[in-house]
Length: 249
Ligand code: IPE
Ligand code: IPE
Ligand code: MG
Image 1 (cartoon, rainbow, N blue to C red):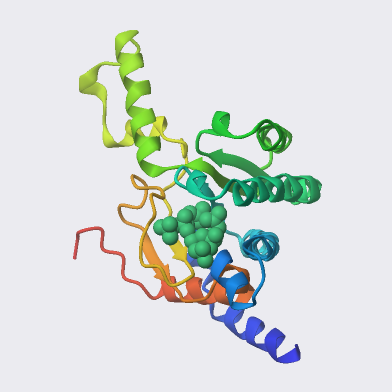
Image 2 (tube, protein in one colour; image 1 turned 135 degrees about the vertical axis):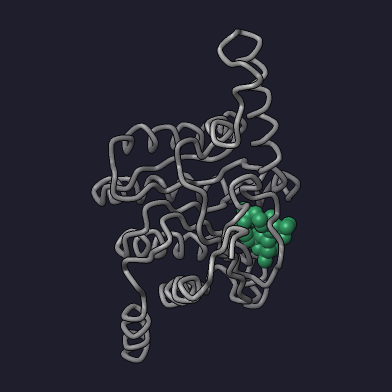
């Protein structure tokens, strides 16, 4: 235990506070395999994954990260057995009920990415309550991606643009890469600087397709329930060594 504390402090000291990524996105993956490895039901993995959400939200906020986006449930995750989907929705409600006051006290603003109308009533209501309660907070924005799909986000945005054009609120010629972003769930937020995907999969799985054009990727074999404070710091340290050229030299 003492050793772990030493490791954490050592890693933390390597982080350049002036070069923090302002937006970190995480694809929280590997809960099922973590549970399987331990001969536990998949839901046990999701439950332990929720502990990591609590930990990493606190760590990111204390470090000074301004935007943290967590991929919690994709538009494709509905394909899973009903029991697992219900378990995930239950955990979401549990997380919000347990953590909302704490998040609010810590000045965290909760936002959602995704089509919230498509969620079952209870989680939908809890999420709306959380967004409403924390809307004036300004230490860190916590984006929770729920019923989120990157393609769905883009198509929804295009539909809204077409509506605005039809109603005369926008001219086709005025559409730019910049104002297109106002039609995305991440409206008025910077693009992720760093995207973390644990669990060993080397793919994006439909996350923030428009926003990750110049995001730095950090992959790891660690399953999400094993992803701790020290792993988060390591990702930041590695990110700070990258040379972001944006097509320049
Ligand atoms: C991530 O873990 C949680 C969600 C997608 C909701 P998984 O449940 O995908 O875990 P693996 O990938 O099967 O191990
Ligand atoms: C991505 O994980 C979605 C979330 C973490 C919420 P998946 O487990 O659904 O992704 P695939 O199926 O491995 O691509
Ligand atoms: Mg997975």
